[in-house]
Picture (cartoon, rainbow, N blue to C red):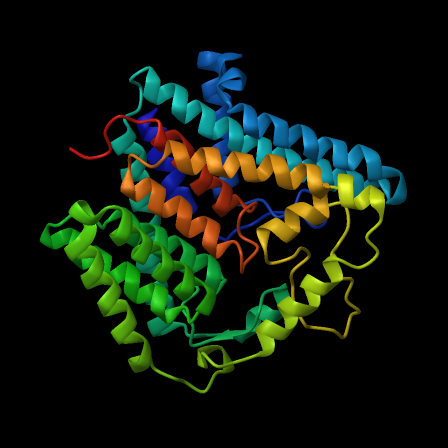
Length: 377
């Protein structure tokens, strides 16, 4: 299954290019298609073992997802209910993907280091294309008509979004922290460099906090290399080019105002039912915008805990928090895995990335890697 795993990583490099929409409001990528094929192959090989191997905490969270929709489905259209279940199916698909990886690792079909290499193939591909895009196609304001933000002189690669591109580059840089050869050093600089060129302030904060935490926790393994990476990252920020684009101004406030508006909208009209069960998993848009409003393209809060609370209520928050704590605990023996999960968790407090295809791809791959005995040669 190694070849199929590397194929998925390669397909992921196409990002948001060549999407198709089987349902209104749903976009399916090459990455989704690759994961679907991988899951079908895994189910044919291991059958019901795959479902059993999904961590109980995630099974509980999927149950809460369904419960939130069952409680609220009568208040929305049937089309919105169907779309909600499709989003749940996507999340379940990636949970099966992670479970198959874990089973394959236990059975010796895939090594933990192969998952790491596949993810590095993915992040390196995104970084490479990102530099090409930044240097030769910096003006992507025309994409606004297609429903994307109008980015200008910001690295967005094929993902077409700075925070997501920064997430991918940041995870790759964290994976490379323990590799101290010349080639890895060049790749690390490339990943950190592209992260900086996204001008994603939330990703800057998440990366700084993650590397600083790793240096404190894993002193013997990461002290010198981690400190050098952190120092170069901080020193480079004041020297970033400031083009004629608001997106390159780190002191900008437009995105902060948009996120605040969506954040406040999440807590409007809270009742005892929504406080306990939520408003349903992707059952409603957080902020309904008129045709002339362009405050944000988001349909959910940018903070993952607010998102989970809005969609699944207090029950969902408790189960989700337990699942995250368990995941961080299981990954602690591998600094690169623990760091990547921590980076993902911190970044998701400021950008709605956790339950996207990219976020789930990383999350479930890291879940499988956390149970691996060895990630390096």
